Image (cartoon, rainbow, N blue to C red; front, side, top):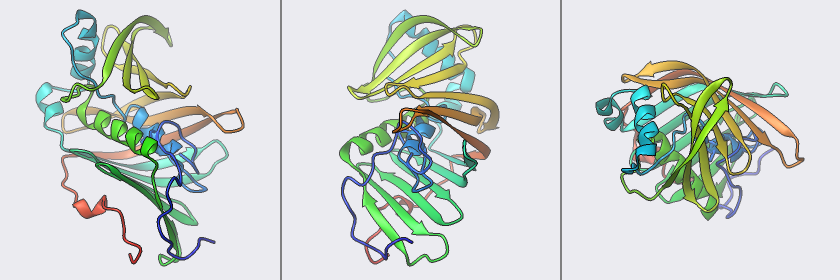
Amino acid sequence: MLPKATPAATGARAVLTELDFAVAVASALSLTVIHAMSPKIVHCLFSAALLIPIMGLKADPELDIVKKARAYLGSEAALDSVSSIHYTGTYTEEDGKTALLEIILQKPCQQRITATMADKIEITALDDYDGWQKLQDAKDPSVWKLMIQSPDTIKRLRANTKENLTFYRDPEGKVEVSDMGLAQIDGHQTRKVAFKHAETITFYRYFDSKTGRLMRTETEQGGVIVEQGEMIAGGLRFPKKLINTTKGPDGKMKTITVDFDKVTVNESFASSLFTMPSIGR
């Protein structure tokens, strides 16, 4: 049973680039936790296709693949007009554990991921430079725990949030983008591109050389994210399913699947959704 409302605890958990259902929907969009949505989940979602990398377009010819990748998703007008993205769906672990999932991303840098399980509700949020996580009893809203995200987790959440909202284009030009050459992925010739946000945050994207379609994403921590299917919203392509494979604390590879049933763009969300709750709330 969860403790009654308690003061925020620092360094509670790091989310973002891998999923651990009870630990991960961050760098995975963080991607998620079921024993307490894990930063992995969050990381995972956002690292994945959802999670399209931010990058500063450069004049180098080899980065034409980035232009092709953007064109595959939709028109420049449609891409640049996106102010928010809203996903709903389900999250499933190998052992059968599931959760209802809602992901909200809003410019300039806000994110909220809610995982609803049978016994608990976990909310991981980012409000610019403030990151927090709230774990609440599903049957008794008065029983909850609030945790403050670590600086590293916040950095990853910001990278994932911006990546998803800018579709491979970083207006600030702070992301180091490197063409790493050709690679074969599932029988397709792809071009591998590295998007380096920081020394500890890099996404490796494999784009189909002919179409620009994202075939695979890898993280610097060894995670692998693959998109399947597609949904159309606002004239843009979004993934229908994300399959995220990461290495757990025990060294074993674990796979988490996220199935989206709906995606909506350009809704307007109140700032209060992303603001860190006070102890009295």
